[in-house]
Length: 444
Image (cartoon, rainbow, N blue to C red; front, side):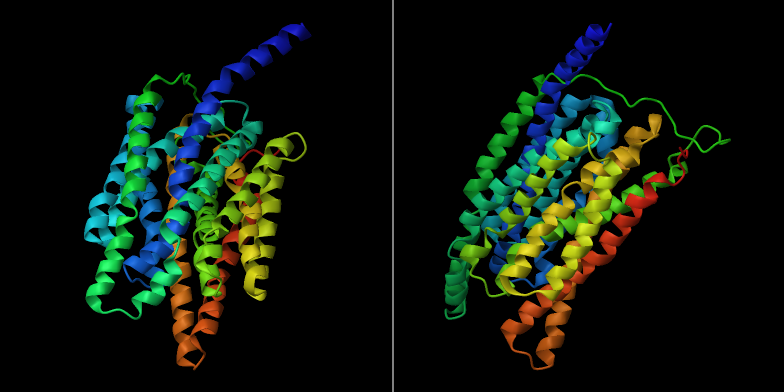
């Protein structure tokens, strides 16, 4: 009897291996596309002569698409299925990449943002399909482990993307800035146009790869899976009839919204932060890599520890506490030490997404697909919080300069001050880890 059980368990494990690898490949793709924003932000700031707040609209354009497209994406996937939905998502991302060609030719910021938004719409399709799929592909207790594996693929790709695009877009940018301050208007326009053209070939290659993958994914062996129709009810309560009857889900949406915001701040501001601290761009362009590698190492620990040694809820508690501690360390240290604490946020952030998804989807049953779309919409936190960080930096900088502080010290202090926005976010995540994920659920 025990041999039969072991054999069935092994067969179940083997049957999920190929789908897990395919979904990991998709996480690799949108990890690569997402995390090049860290290099795009200072690049766009230079070629379009933007303020800090304006430059962080690069992140906003990408992440706001998750609000606009999440529910339509859920509807599309329900209609055409996982494979066709993922294929469509990849093709839409390719179209977004192609828009960078006319954007570079015109050196027009809103056209760049349009291309980024369309790529985000494609990623929304991929995320709306892949996150709930990987969550319910196996036991809910080990969902965080599977999502952590996805996270490793996502952040390794992000590290590669940040290094490759940092080398392409940011090499020599310090010298260019110095040169721009000394040339006339015509020469300045010529230099900026040449810089803008440097994005064309990388995005043509990206578009071709995405189109090809979009065609290939149509043949991928992805089995059909559904969430178990189980509901965790408070004693005496009737069966749920509405998505609004799951307070732990809505608190999870809020926690995920704030988490994505702080994750994007940690990854997309660190290069600009290093530059504000007067660290040369040639060194600062690698800083996003530090954040992502910290996340990869922590994801690997999560794969090993969850659920055998620690629960998903405990992983979330520890992550939130570390986020609070590291946020204070960023603000109250200086120089490269402070940059390292921004990178250390990768440790605090890594297991938040894997932990929140299964906790928020617990007991949703037939509402799982709608709930998943709501959780995908929470990715819009990456659109809202980075520009707020940029606005805090701009306002603080103006105040310091008005008080007579010199430019370089003012830039450094203002960039550090912006990280105060992290603290309330991690405090709310901490609440969800201890209490929020249990609100409205059956007590053990």
